[in-house]
Image (cartoon, rainbow, N blue to C red; front, side):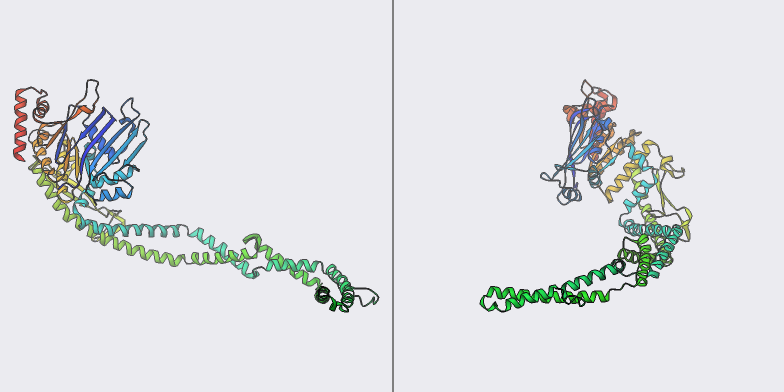
Length: 580
């Protein structure tokens, strides 16, 4: 059952297409038309909808931009729907609207379900919705990496599970190796850093500073440097408050305050307000007495020893030597020492860390080797089944004697991982180089498809691969552009037949120039230009009945009204219906 269907595309100002609507349906749809009529623009349009690269050259001359809009029916809860809704897209009664705009300056915008989205999101959805195959995709199949990916896709969980474990171990090995190289290659720099930190910590430890000590010593130095002036001022202040023993006639503040209090004590009982003032004068007297006592003590305790001042200045000089190098003040110097001690511990632990990393690296390499072996065995098993299935399909595509096989090999590398007693190159996907081989006829040695397959044979190999995938890992829609290139006669009929069978499991859209292929389609669309060389809305139409016979006649003989061609066209249609 087809889970998603590409229902319609509207194409405006793209290449030769002015404004046209391509109406699609489930099953097999063939897109035909004369060379240069714009058939390939259908594939190009779908490529844009699926996040393909935008090219300003695609914009029709004289237009400001090209626009492609698509409508895709998707079932609720499908991965594509979930991802689209996460991006804020809205579905219209089970239909997902996709739009791509390309300006004449090359700028590109994408919309999904009414919301502007990154173009990359369309490419993500494409993986779940459509498989596009054209001449460029055939060339892609010639790459070894693509052949390995095809085999892994076919193998399913048998490869996916060990490959996932392998990828995690590989990622961790890369991180461990990188850290190990960083430590060892920077050993000299780190040793120099450790020496610098060690010297600084030893210099600070020799001084043994205390937090706030620099502030305390600055205050003491200031006091010691002005000891005589401070002592003299304290003596004068004390005499003013408490009197001078050498001048018994002198008047001091304490005596005056005491006299004021005695004068008020005699009358305080007559007025509460005056009593309150008397109490306050008493408090002043007590305060004056306390201050006078502290001034006397200050003068007695003041140390004017020049030796102590020298010692303070010497200590300050030692602290200043530290603050010039390690911080603005002693508190910052101590903070530097704490950080540096931690960093030194880290640096001095490098040897231990190198040992730990080396052990982990060796363990990871052994684990990678075991996982790579498991991965290789799973690929080898899947390769036999995959090759047999593709070979069987080729027999149905007029290549009855062709044989497909896989060459799975490893490359010796002394810096690699050990697999089955050999040390081989490894990468993010394992140790295997996977190459698809083709023997087109008996007696021919299997050769890489890049060297052993013609254009027509490569087209059929591509189709056979997709038919096999359709039975194991299908996508809802397949789009083939010129999959029948270089093919004719019986092979073309067989390609049409296989496409029709593939269409029973998925939506299939084929751009073709072969009537033998188009005859098998459930629906045929004709793309034709107007007199001015453009394709308009009326230039893409569904062919039915007599119109379809005429188009097949044109494809067969280049003449719509040739009786012979018409008879052949009707015969093709009848044979295709009988095969269905």
